[in-house]
Amino acid sequence: MNGKVFIIGLGLIGGSLGLCIKKAHPASTVIGYDIRSRQANLAEMLGPVDKAVGTIREGAEEADLIIISAPVRETERILQELTTCTLKDTAIVTDTGSTKDKIFQISEPLRKQGISFIGGHPMAGSHKSGITAAKENLFENAFYILSPDKEEKPENVSALKNWLVGTNAKFLELPPGEHDFLAGVISHFPHIIAASIVHQTEKLSGDHPLLPRLAAGGFKDITRIASSSPEMWRDILLHNKETLVSLLDMWTKEMDSVKSLLIDSNEEAIAAYFADAKTFRDALPVNKKGAIPAFYDLFVDIPDYPGVVSEITGYLAKENISITNIRIIETREEIYGVLVISFQTAHDREKAVKCIQTYTTFPLEYEI
Image (cartoon, rainbow, N blue to C red; front, side, top):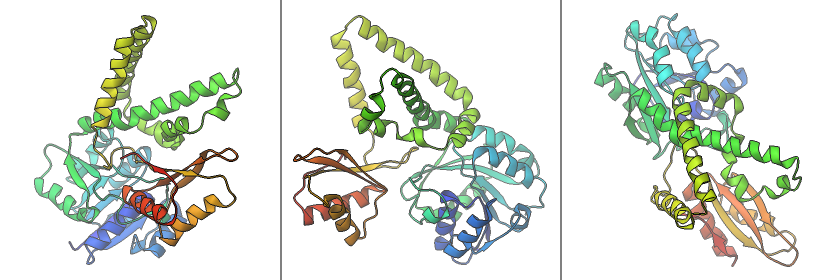
């Protein structure tokens, strides 16, 4: 396609979209804006945008496609500002936020002006943030939700998909409310639960000072998402509060049910509870991108001798395999410890398995 694309917000998502659009549509011009001027300048230097501008108005008024890649609260303000701009009649506006219904409502003044607004949510992310983490394959095989108005022209939805074809994502069309319910169940609600587990552990640690020392390994794994941006999750939860209040009511009933099983010492029912959960969980798609960025961990049993960790990372560096995190779960003198290495993709982990097996005989474990 040939035209001008304006990306508002040049972080990981906005920058990666810029790279995808430039690769798929080399005749187009990608313009960028970020409230942080350094990010905008870096985006221009590193290639996600052809040109950075100093104001939203400057970039928006000639754009054929406007992508708002900002936190949901900031997206509200940007949509309001766009109503004061003289946009092309044929312009398409989309966003990348984790909630859709409230954003869709706020876009009404823009839609009343005849401007097409199609909500969007690329279900992809990374452990890294900022424009320097942007990459062309971030969205590959990820679900990309589009939430058009039921009266939206089909040709506008097709045009947006064409602009985004370079993402190599799987497009799904969902009404805004349906999107928010599904995202609430599989993303927003789990973040609440993770934060709640951490809060409970913190409160108990006052009387049990060993807890922080013991709360490592698996505990840190199941609560990793509690380390996400507090401001971002504040805004997401408030945008989707009706869904989350309903889910919390359901969760309360679920926990009351488990509590009853324990009080009654119902061994058979307790075993069935875990068996049913295991069956459903094990049937979930393998190595697929979802609403929460996946963690591709590799567990390496390493012997206790000086330099063994740098030896492993040296082999990975030799094969140009990037890691996102590394930690030791257990290491005691004269026994094997467990080195946990996290990768951004399943492909990177597969390469790491072959690499370590080539250079060592260390036992490896990972979940597929």
